[in-house]
Structure formats: structure tokens, C-alpha cells
Image 1 (cartoon, rainbow, N blue to C red):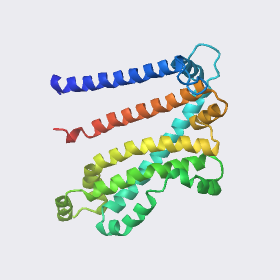
Image 2: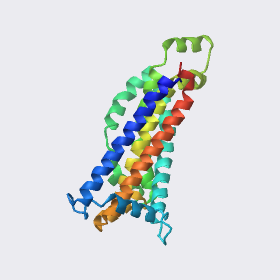
Image 3: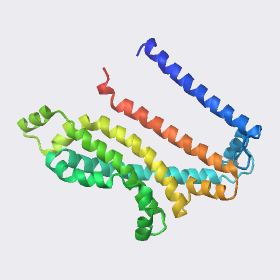
Image 4: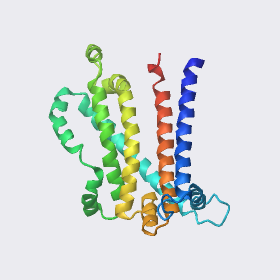
Length: 263
């Protein structure tokens, strides 16, 4: 990468930071000038103070409940995402490698795929009860579809000549999937996994709100009911940070794993 490639990237980061600063400045003006009541829109400094106190970083005798809630939500998100990625890749490879199976299964997949995971929460509650396992199931189910469909597409788009080479070499189906299909489908799979991680975070928060499970979803809901606007916004800021960091980590991993595709 030369200097000409790095310059636009630096400008993009600078522009993104400028937009963020402008939004925070608008927030500061709106809350301090009284455009919106502080009951509903706290000041940025009050939100930051609640964030530090909740994470037990202020140096005072904060209870650190927000840190425990964050750990619960992140753990639930990661566990559900890992399960979704595992089942999505395995099922997607089994479906995508066979045109006949794709023809039979594709209509069913298209029927189930649009179902929102949150709509299945009442069914999951009736089956599993109000427990962490129920939320984990819904998170994994909702996050599985981007990985599954991306894997099916990735395997279906493999160069047909590779399949001919595999037949000439008398490779087994498993060997073809591992040595030829999976590497060629990896860009689609990683893109699906990035989208699945975002969905896992969203479904985890919704599940915590509905099923009264410990986490940021429950903390935000309780803060809203008690009109603790600064605590509510602190939870929202944390969710944004979790989403940003997790996406950045996956983007970095994707770039490293797909170095062989770069010219």
C-alpha cells in the first residue's frame, strides 16, 4: 500500500470523526439550551458520568452494575453468534454443494428466513421457559440466517471447473468442501458472519427486555421506566460501542484471512 492509498483512508477517518463531533455538539446544544427536556434528553456530560459510574471507572464507590450487564450481553451475543456461525456454515455447505438439495430446500429457506427472531420469543418462552437458554436459542436462530444463506451462495458460486477437477482427482465430497468449496466461499461466509454479529447483538438486547434476563437490554428498560435518562443513554452508548468494536474486529480478521485474494 502506497501513500496515495493511505491518504484517502485517513481522510475518511477524519471525516467520520468530524461527523461524530458534530452530532455530539448538536446533542450538547439541544440538551443544555433546553430544546428538549433533560428528563428525556440528558446532557453528554451527565451521560458520560453515568457511564463511568456504571462501569465503576469514576474512582468513586460506584456499584459497577453496568459493567456486569455489559458482560452478560456480550457473552450472550458471542455465544449465540458462534452457534449461529457453526450451524450456518455446516448446513449452508451441505445445501450449497448440491444443486439438487438447493432446489428442494431453497423455497423452505425463503419461507422461514423473513420471520423476525423476536416474533419467536413467545414460542421459545413456552418451550424453554424464562431462562438464559431461551434467549441464547433465539439469538442463535436469528443470527444463523445470514451465515446460512451466505454460505449457500458462496458454495453455489464456486467455479464449475473446480468441481470437474475434483471429479478427475476422485476427491471425496468432504475433501472437495474443505479444500475447494470452503476457501472459495469464504468471502461470502465472512460477510454473512459480520452481519450475523450485528443481528446477534440486537436479538440479545430484545430478548433481555422481553424475557427479563440480566443484560444491557434489561438495564435500558429499567432506566426508561424509572426516567433515569442519563443511565438509559449510557446503555445506548455502550451498545453502540459494542457494535462498533465487534464489527471493527471482524473487519480486521476478514482482511487478514482474505489476504490471498488481494492483488
